[in-house]
Image (tube, rainbow, N blue to C red; front, side):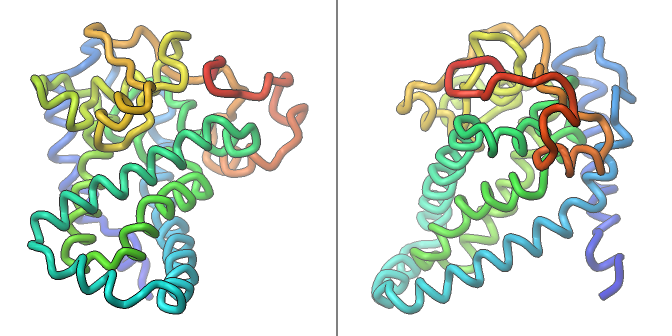
Length: 271
């Protein structure tokens, strides 16, 4: 398989041509430089991370589906697929985001898993490119928590494909440096303002806004935090290194290899 088939440079160019102008004309933080810190590191994530993530996710889904075919009655999938496509898409988004919420919250609560997720929280200036800075282990397990339930329930390939497309574009949007007013929909659809607070390095925002697409899940679970103002700063106090290969190794290294010891993160404590 050629590299061009694994890395869709045309799609990357289209995304850049959409988000770069939007961040220029409608910035959430207008004082943020266009070439912010560590942008080149995140280009490496953009180009190469997806290959590992797709392979890992495919392996987990394939193994899981063997169990599904063995133990889940075939009638469940048939009933789900008999629904209209629009209803399947809505249900898929809800089911998948509940899985994402739970996995995301676990990555914040378990100290070993937090080290993988801290790589993503090391982002100190938000934009569409920074959203690609995710450790492969983090992304594979979190995406598995989203995709396994919808595959197990037997949603149609079309519904799952539409969900995947919506998830991808919304993920880019919520990390972007774009100021956009969702109005009353801000409680239903995740916006940059909603997700920026998840990345805020401010005590009131720690362990908030875990949902990827549906803020009302956080509202129901008591983890919603979305004041009107924008966060003053982003990032984590953990000693996450700045280069791609170092960040891949970071979760596996003893603490004294990456910096001073940091207290194990638990829900409600500093990130």
